[in-house]
Length: 121
Image (cartoon, rainbow, N blue to C red; front, side):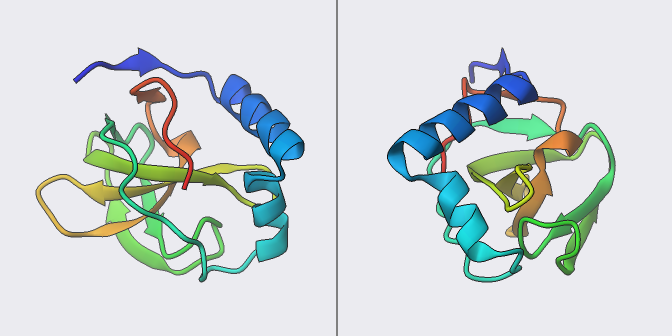
């Protein structure tokens, strides 16, 4: 599977510009208002990555949301899609390799490798 470096700043800026232009993800994020539930997601991406900084997989795309599972460094995850939350942070809905465990991880906790850009939810 092809892997390409993605810079977080470029990704956030591009998504913010696209969202502002098309009324997309940033508007959805502010409408969500920090809630941990109700975020739509689907398996729209075939990319994968490994966890670069250990942390908790979450029930929603905010650090305050409940934990699903602790993910140690080098855990392989498969991308489903990404969102920008109300604070402008990118969160990725993933599945842990070899399991059925799914949830949200902060893009900051990935090694920042993906197949071009991760698909938007």
